[in-house]
Length: 567
Image (cartoon, rainbow, N blue to C red; front, side, top):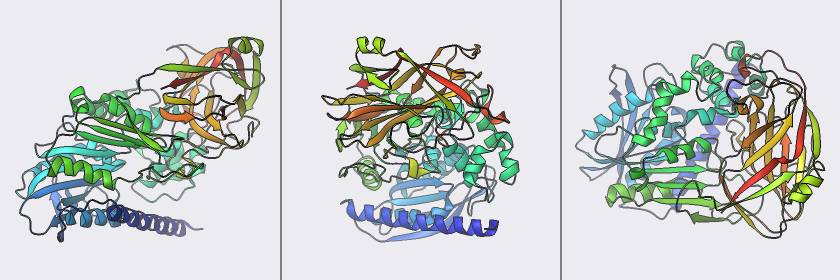
């Protein structure tokens, strides 16, 4: 297939998905049961000058018969999704809202140069100050998902007086958390997104791009030109690096603590921004939390169902009803919300209101790994069944991501999915508990502590927790990864052959393990392309030119354990 044919196929697929999403959003409006005050609408296209004279394209939808009305606004870098925005404009205007869609600088019909993230604060504030001054604008609500939520967070601490609240979905202000886990890059988020939003067509194969070494050269070698902002991502592997501690990303991370308007934060267990979003909620100041809502559901980044097991009847995966409830309360009833936190309980198909987030830990269940590949809570069995379990890890043949929480480009792999049989690859070691005699409700961040040895100077260890149903089928709950270098004390070096402890931290979850099920923990050294495949050489991952096989050892016993926080 030629490059031109590849681009045509990409465009056709993108158009198909947009049509499907537009129909889905329209159906949500039809089914939500909230009609407001039905009225006609009008739409106009215009350009708004920014502070430097660059003009940004806007569509303005107005409800007919009203001289002043509440206005909902979005700012988007995805002009190809105009069919979706048209649905929002028409349906909101019919319900008495004005609606504005502004296209970000350098994309679509807007003027200027596209450079992700950095212009959104200045352009967003200029736009809101203009809207705040319009006589027909009674009050303002800001909403959006993903990058459209980023454009909201970018200005949340400095909005003008008519802005009464925001609804921001599947995004967080902790960009480092969305980019790295223990020095391993989240390819499936930022490599895939960067290829699709490079500012010029990219036809290179995605997985080939993820595998390219040294990765520092992938943009010029395969993507048609150097992307400075991508280079910044791939070389800033530590939270303490200047890229994260100065400039825009530092400013963005601090915005929640300074935000004064109510926030409705929505995310999902299998959204790739979940970790960042949870850190963002925690960073909100106490006064803002008093009037903010948070919903944590079970879907992927596109609000699609992503569970292989059972029938779910209460997912509530869709933003339209939430949007209308939130802004009707704020802008039409003119009331301040009271704090609310709701989480979808996995394996129970129900929502639960929580007093706080993170969920206060009540107790822990600790399962130690045994040399015969068991998981036990018994100290006696742990001592009697201690020993070593070994496997080889080859970066040229990484374990493929399947059942993940940090997938975007390969979103079909995100969710709680049916897993292969235990020990399904030579580099996957599966540890299995006895059947549970009672339910265990996990609530919070799971940890896996491992005592390990290897024959290289740095490597990775991954972990995936599963529930094995009574019929023998296993479904993933959470997964994570770490590197030896990330878990060593600052300035320390690893000496091949030494036994050291590493920790795999999982994102929070609320999941009720059922009686009769078993717990399965898969240990490996890769999860690709959810994370970059570690080369087994020390240093910055993107600079590594070659790989080597690592011989890994897990020291089973008290030093290797699974820790479950229980509600």
